Image (cartoon, rainbow, N blue to C red; front, side, top):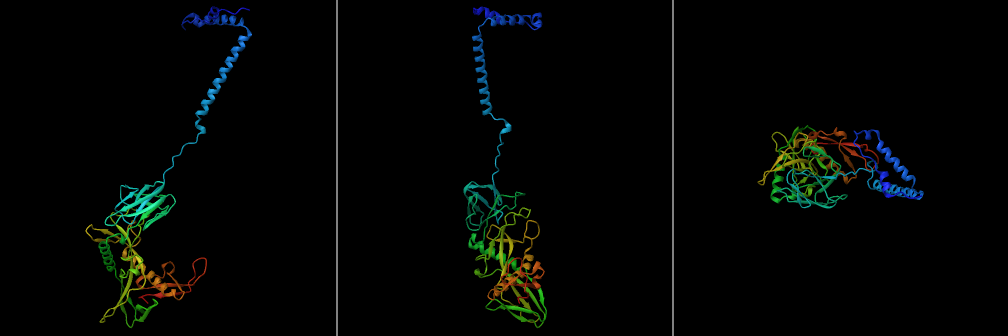
Length: 400
């Protein structure tokens, strides 16, 4: 069998191209004639050439399949890919017992006054609060996982904080407290004088009935030395800042910086300094026509919370944090009245320590009558599980 010439193969492959609106295009006559000629030529080609053509075609199909499979492997479908989640950085609240000044974080001054919400870097962070007239105070914190270092630097976990009019729950609340020791001596003394004046403005009055006990002093073990009233006496209770630094747990000036209540639901006023003042109580008894009997201050006291505002010229003004959700629960007068029974309990506890005896406040406050007296429970020593049942009650009033 002879192979067809190239010109014969070209003639067989030629298909008439006619416009679609011509009769030949509609009838398909040219296509049939071309296909017939191609069939005639291919029928004369040897079988070996047909197998080679099939082999080439198969190789091409295989190559295309490999390429497509490779492309599918490089571009995974959306159903098989996990979405990328960008983690939200943990935020830290920078708080203080002042509502003025500025924070500096790792050398960068932050905008706004305390409290602020920031993001710490991993590793060592340095936080400085600059709030004149106080000296700058610095805390360091290794984030995450370590407690802050520095004087009066504290941290709380998972507490709600009011910042910028909205309540947030940061991963950590870092508190930088400022106390009287952070002031120049002259300003600390003027602050103490302002607080003492505010305390002196609160005097509670009552009457000692005839035959009741009162006390003017304590013995060497701290037990009140009682006397009995021969006639009704007026009784005034005053509150003092201790003169002896060793008496106060708040240092030389008797003032401790205490954190503001950040969970109160309200933003605090600007330019305030929140402190706790350690105060002692002192009785004065009077009878008509007789000189007043001034008792020695009790050897135990308690703390009350105050806000101070600096006037910029060396003076301080005490702001009674009375009323409103942003203030402490009680006014200064109410705090002082509520602290009387606590002072009496501490006095008895100090005196009873040498005898191995314990004392506690009245259950549910039912024994607290403030200036008119307190029912203080005597508790058993030792014991386990649950609140101990009292073994007796001490009536403490008028210092006796």
